Length: 369
Image 1 (cartoon, one colour):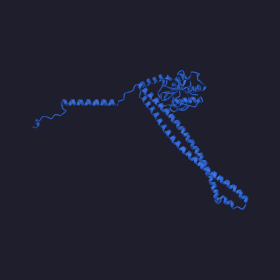
Image 2 (tube, helix red, strand yellow):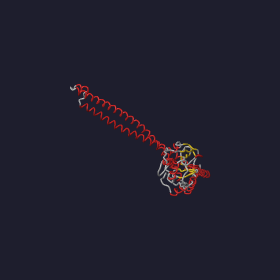
Image 3 (cartoon, one colour):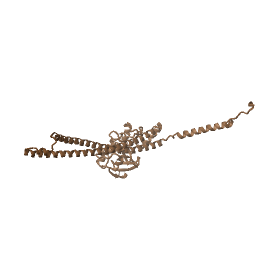
Image 4 (cartoon, one colour):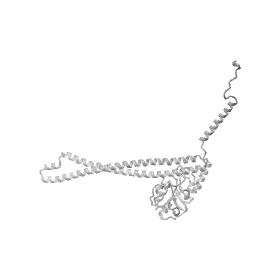
């Protein structure tokens, strides 16, 4: 009987099984396709990379100026703390000297038996000695009282100085914390720019550098892409100097402005390094500060303080030596040299150069000196 039973069919056997298997494979392939497309990032074009890198450099410059401001405040707080610490040390020395003097008086009294001066004088049999010793005792008492007052004054001064030092130390630590935060922000933006540039092929990198050279008006390569390196190629220096670096005398409103422009010209080709104020490298506000320092004028450190360091002028009134500021956040500055041109430290990988002032959004200008 068992031999004549009809074989049991699989639920997915035959045509139905083949159809189900086909659907399963198609479903798996589709899932794999969608999964792969969900994780694959589309390759950005050269123009997109350039736009992102430009934005990262701008953000890095904003963070650089904040770093510069935090460093200036930290330096001021450190100097104030050290002054207070030195003064506290001097006061402590005077306090110790006053205490030693008071101790010497106490020791002398102890050696004399600790008798009250009036009692000692009353025991003498010589009236002249009595009067002489009375005067000496009065002077000794005055000296002792003065010594006690001196100890009290120095002790109060030392306590106050130490309290002020503690306050300045807290301020210094807060500024140093902000300094580290802004430094991390700058380095993060620059690393992101380097990462984007590293993804370009050789052909794409060539197109990127050609676009940069066209924008800057020079043949400078951006090969260092935000590295903040300390060197520039000789070709870059030649290009920068040939683009306006040797045009002869500058017509400036006054001698100081001419000196500032002359100094800036002498820096052409030197590298941009964030936070640098010269003499071998500069960031944008470090260059303008150094240029005007050479002319005998002290400027504050950051772009957003330099813009308030002189008299505001309109774009149509620009004269050589004026400071020109860019972007809504006042995050970049250059030194106007006339003819719609400026000298500035552009960004990491691009040295100090001459460039047109209309390559960035104009935010304002200031005349100093």
